[in-house]
Length: 267
Ligand SMILES: [Zn+2]
Image: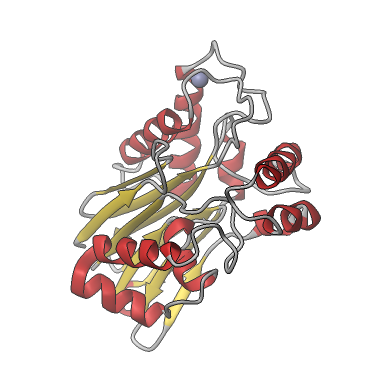
């Protein structure tokens, strides 16, 4: 397959998304926000996603390695890179994972948390995503969303939300993300689609997919038309233009004005 990628930070902070592609693989990682809270790791989220991403590419270079096994291997390897950090800290750097891999006649996918893969079929679109993270702590989430993004109240509510969310992260009653232990790999959503049912595909971070799912400012058909015409850069520009019309999150309540946005467009 032919893959075009792009990624852009949502503001002045370093990008916590990571995207990569080969001729048979596309993957997007979205580092989970720390909201300025302690993580027990001196390396930080951008380091974590780049280390995990590059090890995933290596692990999955072997076509016989399944996507969950490759993820477990990569998670284990990254954990060994920083034994001096407190990986048992509930705020240890963590990330969503979305992987699409081509093999003869099929596409395999894996998603862990809310970075979606959208498959364009002959007739319609299939959205593959893991929204378990949205089911936890709805009251604290609602509290964050009642404040505009630039306010002190928003910052404090977000920290309360993230602190509580960390207690449910990678537990059976909560949701699963890539973090300090390989166990989360077994909780990823995986599947396979016959190649004849895939015309093209987009692997996105939620900073990009929110154009459709949160803002309602495009359909998937329009997203794919944009990708065909202008590539990933044009799609990310669309997201930023929409966000610029609502800079403080009054119309579309959110965690920050602009989120890191990534795209891998697979044709
Ligand atoms: Zn560390």
